[in-house]
Length: 278
Image: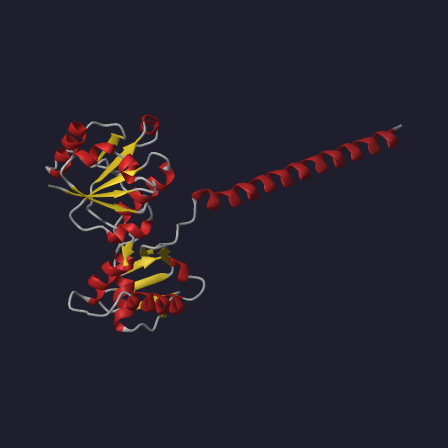
């Protein structure tokens, strides 16, 4: 018997994939929103209802990837939905809503036995943080020295308490990765900490205040899920070259005008000379 989670917004969950009712598996039904991701048990297979809301289904698939959850996803589709799904969704398998009990059971068995490869593509920017020659982590003007337990912004030290530094270090080491409050509490405060997840919110608020208004957005909030570190985007190349191109064009126009003025002046002198000769 496999533990299954069906995430749907349908008023009649049994109609989403009727074959499930004919199989002997435990099925937990949750609303189709981000908050439900933190309510799922660890060892479950997620059936995601994508029949009517492909955009929401894709968002939830990406959130599962971003939070690092190992939950395999079985996407429930209509026939038309197959034209939209691709490896970027990160699902283990897909099934049509009219699939037979035998087909659903076979697909479940393949997932449970690891026989179905996860159709996963890397998230944009989902790369580990890079250290410079000094071993420091740099993200724009923010520099974190994980060995010296110091952080600076624009070269000025940031006065951080121990747990504030640990939280910032953990987030910056995993850029663009979404963590639930429970995950951050476990990783930063440890398994033996008995405080609530509200502790994480308090420390995030303090961190943002110390980063200041210009940089507080680097610690982003994913509504109903948790937090992530959003590194600043490097300047686009075109933004760097456009001014040069504009300046070059402007200089070219100025040179053209100077040449034109010189030609007109030359013609004027020639005309004047002709008049005097006559």
